[in-house]
Image (spheres, rainbow, N blue to C red):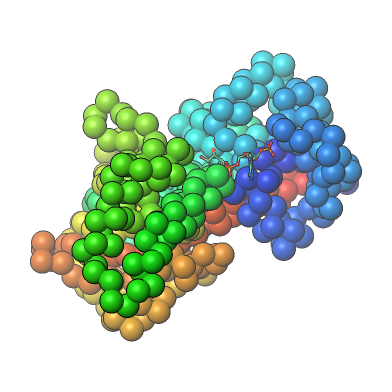
Length: 377
Ligand code: NAP
């Protein structure tokens, strides 16, 4: 390749994932390596971010503009990918498509990117001429990063993971709805909350009335109360009774690891939306292939990679560190509550928390861009 910079088209940079990605790319000086054009589905012609090589936003639905790019990086969402990716490929655009949405993840000719787990596989795919590189589901990436040590050591037979997923996983507008719900509950109960002599059952009844939808509790986007409650359903239904979010854990996890057929690790569990603002948590039961030596196992977990933050299994450290609030905005993956289980000597309990917008979405994409340059330029 010549010394010219590659043209990078960035779509969806103002959403939850996109704005975190923009920030990270800025921090790591990634934009120095590209001539970047910013696209928008709604703000064409307005001013582009400062790091842009072109001052104004281009129309994200204009395929002629998009086709001028060597790489398109999109965090705009699945509907956008479904509409535009096919049109560009039909028009014989042979550029690199890098995407946070799930649309293309399980296509045979798409590679899932999570380089601490599958750098070799990504490099092979670049050499093979693969054009679509997709970030995996956030909880899947975070789970694999948390369990990277035992997975790489080929110790794991199956994984049962139950998630506690933050509102921001559903996008910018949903985060605002969670806050509206919190504010609404406070306003409704304010007099009783602030009165030290008020009757708690009276307050509880008032709040329950709101949560049970008997009033105007704001829930248009989530479709159910989240503040003061939880939602054990994320994404669309699958025929086998799982939700699509739950289905992704096994299929995407094994695809990232390059495991097929009998080598696959079985993964299943219930995905739950909770009222955390940002960062997803998971309670994991790990079945290992043989009895576990706990000191060796803890070393294996904690030394797996640079971003692993091992939290000792005690109350003080757990309360202080192992929470969505603590890991929000951090690249560290918290792993704690590691302990034997009554289920048998091959079983381990693990609780993990990570920022689903960083390692769960933005970071693998920006690291792929750098890896692509390293391999091709
Ligand atoms: P999002 O916050 O809803 O943003 C998507 C787009 O909505 C933006 O690019 C923007 O497009 C438009 N938008 C409209 N009103 C907005 C507002 N008030 N603030 C910001 N943007 C607004 O979506 P997202 O959560 O980033 O998700 C993008 C994709 O990444 C989805 O496919 C999602 O499944 C995937 N993903 C999300 C997460 C996560 O934790 N959120 C994690 C992994 C993967 P215009 O500028 O063109 O109007």
